Amino acid sequence: MSEFIKVGERIINKPTGLDYDLVNGKVYNLKWDHYNGVSYFEEDGSLSLPAKVYTTKSDDIFIKRVNTYFQKTSKLSTGVMLSGIKGTGKTVMAKVIAKNSNLPIIVVDEDYPTGRINDFFRKFETPVTIIFDEVDKHWDTENLLGWLDGVQTNAKKLVLFTCNNEDRVNDYLKDRCSRVRYIRHFEANDNARFLREILRDKGIAEDNIENTYTFIVNNFGLLSIDNILSFIDEKLLFPELSNEEIFNDMNISSKRGKKNIVEETSDYENEENEDDDWLYDDDEEEYEEDESLHKIVMCSYN
Image 1 (tube, rainbow, N blue to C red):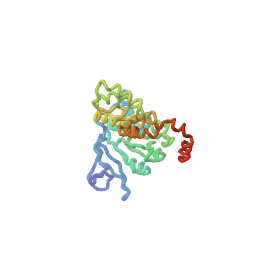
Image 2 (image 1 turned 120 degrees about the vertical axis):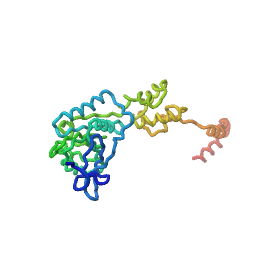
Image 3 (image 1 turned 45 degrees about the vertical axis):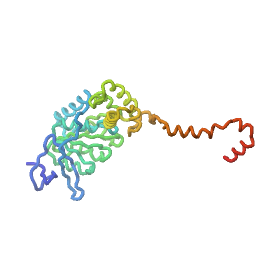
Image 4 (image 1 turned 30 degrees about the vertical axis):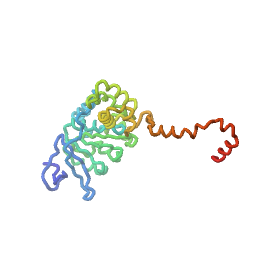
């Protein structure tokens, strides 16, 4: 017998409606109806992954390791924490792990009440993968401890957390493999590993790849995929501009702190300066000859 029913576009616990079973590989957004005080699913359909996901051999091993452990363990809950600053690939990694799990994928809405999570999933009999994106920002992780212990749980769950600041995550989630078995840190410049491949894929000329790679690595404060792709777009749109000229006007932080903006003086400004030279080119000898006039001029400015 199915656990859920589908009413319109919402998938909820019975009481009435058509039977509905969660589908492996399908994405469901878990939401909370504040007006009626009930949980429901919305079918999302996809994880919105980029056309090409860039991974290293180490990444591939980690993804396989997580899913293999989950499949073979008798534990009801397997937790994974992916931490690091924004734009470093945490969410993409979570989505890839979820996709490879071949389970129904539940993305918890950021407005879903933490206190309702345990009660909702306690009724489950279907193994699922659950994603909490930016858990440190949207949920009280202390209230997730018992749920992660598998208390009053009937079905296995693979729980994927991403967080930007580990200091805001409850200490009892740390060094507790029974709750969070795996943790992986993402650094600001991790995407440098894929940068040359990205430059080639996006159409940067082969003889310009090394120069562009060096400039980006040496100057970008954050090597996020967003920043990298935006910079490449500008290079392709404005090939007449140098890397420095493109970078200076973009919303990308500089590793050096302040950007080295090249200031150019217009011909108009030069002409103005030439016209104003008479203000400063007076013959010094005239002032020396008439010290009293010099004193009067100085006093007038004081």
